[in-house]
Length: 288
Image (cartoon, rainbow, N blue to C red):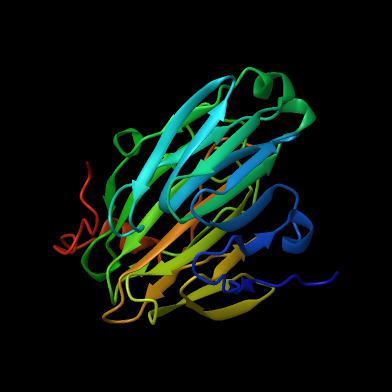
């Protein structure tokens, strides 16, 4: 069986231009559910689309836009940068036509998941929704130099079909997604099988970190920079950011169940029971 790529680099889109820095289809990623793109839209651009058989969550990374569906229009943003404030997003279920007009030069993470026949009747009852900063969750997780900030956008409790999303902030020098965990086996409630995207940004675009993705079959350590994507299909996948470089990543998950249940690597699971006090640098982004 061919082994698919794990690491993907963004394409540069010149300032003031419209284009996709990333457009990773399920076929390119080698899995069934997630389609992930990052779209740069110039000021005043009109983008019309239809979700079709996919549900979508559009996460504003930078800028501002107006979105319309069903004859009503909503303002999304502004957001100067992912380190400037909590997320603004739009959830669009299957079968939804939408129309977007940008009010500033904007970047949008276009996160999609294919609906299944089994869940199509439920998906048909889901409603489009604007997600405001005050709607998003907040958790300081871990301890010491394994502390990070979790901001839920579309948690398992959100009325969606497959998609689950969160933003994670990790101070320079800290570990994240730690202890190493995996979600590649359908064994609820202990663990569920999920595909996952990590989309990285840094407060300083020169920043970098390392993500290890390992299982019994393979072991890869990837250098990840500003705008990079790691596609996690199976295995444990901890991340560490270099000293002096605060890191952000957007997690997009989808599978056959609405759960984030995961199993820790038994070698390191004991750390979860022994956390020192949390890193006082957190939260990196205050809750609104």
